[in-house]
Length: 541
Image (cartoon, rainbow, N blue to C red; front, top):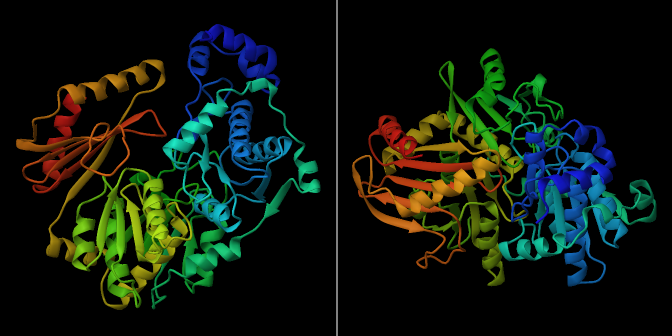
C-alpha cells in the first residue's frame, strides 16, 4: 500500500489543478487527505472538497467516472448515463467533467442544463431508459462536503452487488491517466446532450395529487438549493397562490450563508422561514434540503410554530393519503425503514394496508416497488418514508421526493384547515387513537483517522457488551443485522435492541458521514424517558 508521503508526492507532481493547495498543506492535512481513498459504496462517494485521495475533487471524480464507464461498457454496447447536480461548490463543474470523461470512453450522457433535484435525476434515468445515473450532491451535509451518487437503470441508488462490481473497476483506474472529452465539443457532436424533462416530471408529481382545498398560506424555503424554481412552479401550477419564499434562501448558493448545515431535520434550519411565517400569518412552513429530496415543516399552533418530525410527517401523510384518496388499490402496500416509527405500521394496518419494513436507505424502498412490479403488482405501492424526512408517493421515481411531498403537505394542510383542524390537531388525534411513541435520533461524530478507528471500536463494543436493559426495562429482543437470518434483508451494520415495554435502541454508522447514529424510541414516559435513555446511551458511548 502506498504511503501517505508517496501519494502526496505523486499528486504534487501530477495534480496541476490543485498545485497551490498541495504545496500549502501541513503534515496533519496531508495525513487526512491521503491516508485512504474515498470509499465508494451504495451511496456513491461523499467527502470534503479538496486535493487528495480522501477528498472530492476533479481527479477523484474522473477516476470514479472512468470506473463506472468500464463497468457499463462491460454490460452492453453504447450505454447511456443521466447526470444532474445541486447548488454546492463545484457541483456543475463535477457534473460536466463526469459527462466529459464518459464521452471520452464512448458512453453517451444526458445532462441537465441547470441544477435539478435528486428525485428529478431518478426520473431522468427511468424516462430516458439510461443504464445509470450520476447525481452530484452532498444532500444536507455541511458546506465543506460534496458527493457523487450513482443510480442503476431502475432509478434506485445502486445495489450492494452493483456497487461492489463498480468499485472493482474503479480500483483498476490510474487516477492521472483518465481522459476527458471537451464538454462543448461533446455537446456539438451529440456525445453529451442537454435535456429538460421538467414538464414530464411535474406531470407525474401531479398525478399523486389528492387535495381539494387551496386555501392555505405557505412560507417556503429551498435552503439555497435545487428546489428554488421547481417547487414554486409546482405551487403555482397546483393553484397555491399564497406562497412566500424566504428571500435570503431563495437562490442557489453553495456557501449556504444563512444555514451552513442545511438539514431540515435541524430546528435552526427553519428559523428564518418560521420568522417570516410569524410576520405574515402563514399556516405552514415547508423547507426542502439542497437536493430537494428531504422536506422539513412547521405548523402554526396559535401564535407559535410546532416543528413536525420526520416520523410525525410520515404518519400524517400516510393517514391523509388513506383517509382522503378517492381511489386506492386493493391490498395496498406501505414501506418504512427499520429506524422509522412503529406507529406507521399500526396506522397502515388500520386501513387494511400491508406494512413492509426495510433497511435504512431509500433504495431498499425502491427494491420493494421493483419486486411488486415483477409480479405485476407495482400499483399496490402507495407510500414509502423514512424518519430522516424522506417521503415518496407513487413509483415514477425510486428515491425520496421533496417536490411531491411539498405538494401533499400543502394539500393536506389546506384540506384539514377546511375541516377546521391543523396538522397538530390531526396528529394529536392519531396519538389518542393508537398511542404515542416518543423518538429521538442522536449522532456521535468521529472524524479523521482516529475517529474511523474509534467508530469500529464502539460498534464492536456494542456487539460484545449489548445493553441488558433500556432505562430499567429488560431487553427482550436483540438483532444484529450483520448476522440475522430471521428477516429477508441484506446484511447491514445495524444493531437493534427492544425492551419489554416497547422501547427501542437502534445503532448504525452513517453511510455518508463520519457518524454513529442512535435511534431512540420510548413507548411510555414522554420526553423525560427519552432523556433518561439518552443519558444511558451517552454514558455507553
